[in-house]
Image (cartoon, rainbow, N blue to C red; front, top):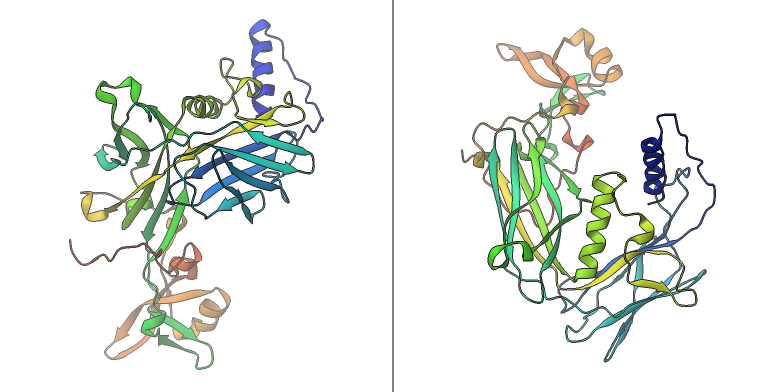
Amino acid sequence: MILSVIIISGLLASVACRELYEPEITDIDHQFLVVEGFLEVGGNNTSEIKVSRTMPIYFNEPNRPEVNATVRIEGSSSGSWVMRPSQPGTYILDDFLPENQRYQVRIQTNRGEYLSEEITPIATPEDLELGFTSRPGYVSIYASTTGNESAKYFIWEFKEDWEFRSPFQNYYFFDIASNSVMTTPFNQIVERCYLNYESSNIILESSERFQNQRISRREIQRIDTLSEKLGERYSILVKQRGLDRGAFEFWDAMRKNSDEIGGIFSPMPSIIGTNIRNVSNPNEPVIGYISAGKTVEKRMYIDKRDLSGWATRIEDYRFCSLDTVTPMDYQDMYVIAGLVPVIPICEGAVCVTYLAAPASCTDCRQRGNQFPPDFWEPYDHTTP
């Protein structure tokens, strides 16, 4: 946020004159409160609120979480819930929150008390549909839904999980004690591993822009050709949330600051709306927005057989190659160089020479997790 202000100042100065302008960077540490959260009503998911403080631009820390805060949810008709910390600066609630009332969030910190405006939960339409289209150079993953009078504004987020393989398999290993190559026990062979990615992109849309409020094929993610994500099997979990107009305008302003990197026409942080205030000092800047409603989730899988001619390239394996290792080289190549036997070269029934590769090219666990996620559905890899 502070970086955006500095960039804007520099750009405005460059418009006024062509001389080099070097803006003065203040060393004042304001430590303004930053709040982001969503209250899950109706018992669908866990409510989560993240609380942190702003930092000067010269700080090397990735963030400054607000620890030891007390975060309380207060119902307009009944109920009060204290959120528990799950990690520094993140507070969660697993309890049931009724849908038919408004809420306020009260945050007590060592620098003051903050209170949100009353938040009306938005009932998110449940007709979320996912699909994908293969285009030259990329695959586009999209979401479709229909808005209504109470839910016109939407935000999406997603998490990806994918399966991958190393170029060579660990069917053999070198046994130092016997100075020989042994067959890897079946239960120790790792053929596939898994990676994941959680998006931080701000993906928004308003159904007011479309006929019958039908949002059709809003792109959620684009995966470029050669990406390893679609090399074996890919899963994407999309979360859809309805927003009120204030929340939509807040996230749209944040998106513009992020996408345009603080262009001269981007909204400055000081004029981005918020629904949280300092109780004793309402003029203190607070950054963030808290919404409430029901999150709708849907998962989709894409298998490599669903994409004709998809080519995959994993940069970490780009230079993987095989070297010939004879018995006289066992100690040097297997012990000192750390190679792993991959393919035996045999003369009759005797196999003592092997084509070997670095361990990083044979053990996918060095890049990912060997165990599939809990939700991973069975998949027949032998079916073309």
